[in-house]
Length: 143
Image (cartoon, rainbow, N blue to C red):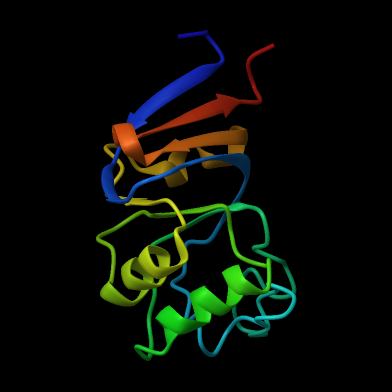
């Protein structure tokens, strides 16, 4: 592995592979109530990601909250081409997010072996390889 990469084991929830820029939140997301399904933008003014789009990003957050209809909201994001490329829950995955990713074929993992909050601010790109239960972080700080 190159010096500017770090491999982290996670628990696989939905198989798949994705590469992209990350978007990170320390707060949970309610996919039904907090996201504009046509743009992928967080529309809750009280959320730290307010007015930021999750479209084509690797979404890293603790877990989902809210109604079971949130799974269909994730499917709508995929249908509208505004979904994230992959999702990583920093804690245990909730059933809403897991089932939404499963029906939408969005790679998903949870329970990273380290606290991503400590290192995520130095990361530009990430590979999600849930087939092999790992993510690969690319560190900005190494030249």
